[in-house]
Image 1: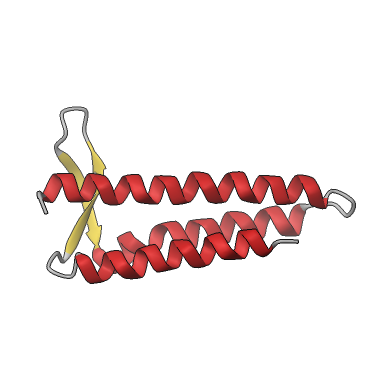
Image 2: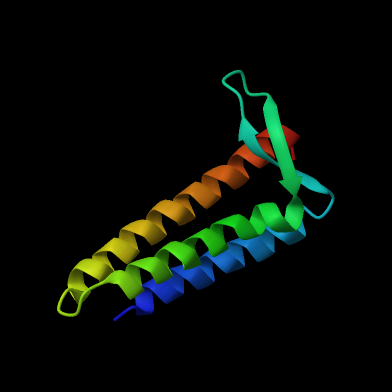
Amino acid sequence: MYLAGIAFFIISCLIAIIANYKLRHLHRLPMQWGLLGQVNWTAPRPYALALFPVLYALIAAFLIFTSSSGHEATTTRSLLILAITLVGTQLLHLLLIDKTNGS
């Protein structure tokens, strides 16, 4: 039932691993940008890239453990919405990092 949620978690981890390899020349990655595009703060590369898989795992675990029995379809739908949103946000974050560093 939660196979799609696990698949998205694996996809998110693979995205982070590939990005870690491609961005190995950077020690810190931008995490927040101002309205004019300037970087407001950065984080060490491993922590920055692990943010989305960890965030997904925590929220998904919360959704699964707080779901009531008999509502599996709603929980599965919520996990899919969460997964699509977080993977999309992870890809946007990597796009912004690429745009900021001109790689």
